[in-house]
Length: 332
Image (cartoon, rainbow, N blue to C red):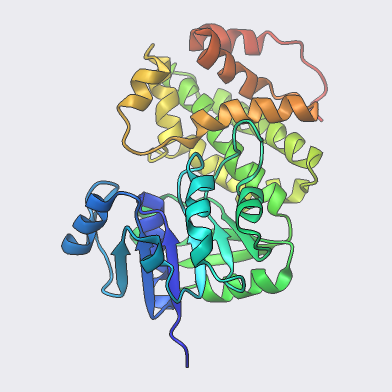
């Protein structure tokens, strides 16, 4: 019987946590990290002290900074790199990924300029067709601790969804299947945008009424955009939409929410992101979301408000006031 080997591309907090929770499901797990020094440290210390400190790597996880080594004999690839480098990673990795090997994308984002979803970029670069999307409410530290987590695997091919579901589902990590990768990816990318706005609301001292309204109207924006691209409203009402949105907007571990809190204190975006080792995807995706919404002819007032803060230097307080003073229409 052939040895099962999972390759995880991306050794940040989420990539490390996924490697850990999936390690019991595979004979070997290769965890690839772009930074050679961090990969060497993780291999020696058996811990990701930079991005996920306090958790010991299972013995069957091999850490490497070599794509050729990490992808050798892989039976499945799980991509967890930042959205801004995804294209280049797959350009470099495509020669080592056999055509029959499924690729699962857990990267949340939309590429600025092209406005392409992550799975679209993977298909374009690699020529592969067996590509699935993994998304849902999941903080890395809680997954690494073995706390119950429910996520979605989405793909057009049901057999691929079933294959990933069977391979990844375990005692604390449960996968539901979806045939709507468009909705899953748009929900995943844009919830980070709304989470920055949620952080601003929290930082300005606004209460539960405002937070509930922001999450609800944020979900409406995300759904409008997803549906305009062929996604389904039911997807956005599930784990990959509402579930992930609630977690990221309200959870203390949310990096994007933290960006919003710091913006509310008057700090510049450059000052905030410059002091963060881990990437807050919502910043880049604010630009991408506004570009995409304008192309699709979809109104996204919350995203546009954040965009004005980022590009015009508006204060969060003034931008929020302008958002509230917009003409009110029907809810749906």
